[in-house]
Image 1 (tube, rainbow, N blue to C red):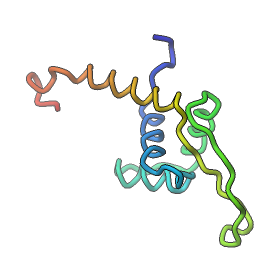
Image 2 (tube, one colour):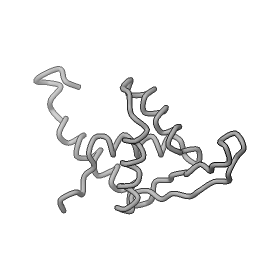
Image 3 (tube, rainbow, N blue to C red):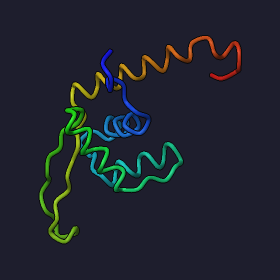
Length: 110
């Protein structure tokens, strides 16, 4: 398998958040979802840097919503996982599952 074919932990978590959020995924909602489910703090900068990097790789795509008065006339940038991103999630989860096989019997790990 090619180098970079598997996701890093944070990329994996961000893509899972996009899947959970669907059409409502933008920086702030992605951050909230990750913090709620992982119980770890995440900077909004880390979210956007990761989303931008994954968009360059073709794992996500973005669109700009309508500007709103509540946001001072600024628009939200929404993100969706692509087919390529879904394949990367599946590949990574399959690898993790294979790595965990048999560990429960030895270490009570799983």
